[in-house]
Length: 122
Image 1 (cartoon, rainbow, N blue to C red):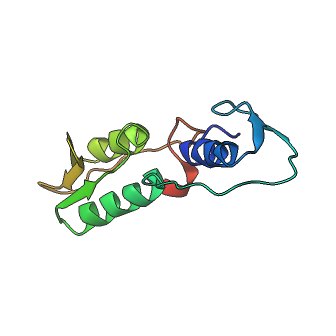
Image 2: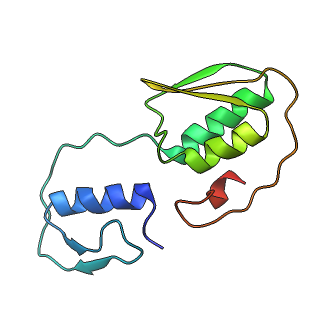
Image 3: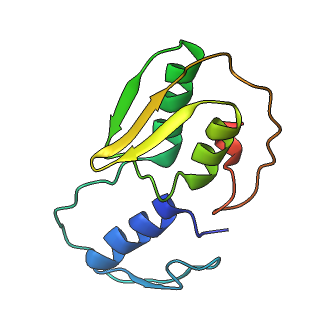
């Protein structure tokens, strides 16, 4: 399944470099060969799995953390599970604030393809 935000971003970068790619944002990409690619400038987006890992680290250490530029929209399934566990997740202008105010509560999680809960976060 090719609809994860990271795959979509990579496909867009390659397309901007001259690649011919159909289906960006869908479950299936079709890539047509080209003779060459050209350089571009690109700022890589924040990674939802990496940000989720930092959020969990803050939670299990009873810490507080501001994840600047966290991809909050792409992290919604992660944020929902953290909130179910009693972790405070506050969406702010520049990212996501994560903190705890008590014990971490038990929870169940089911992984699913994007936009579900990512398998790399279980």
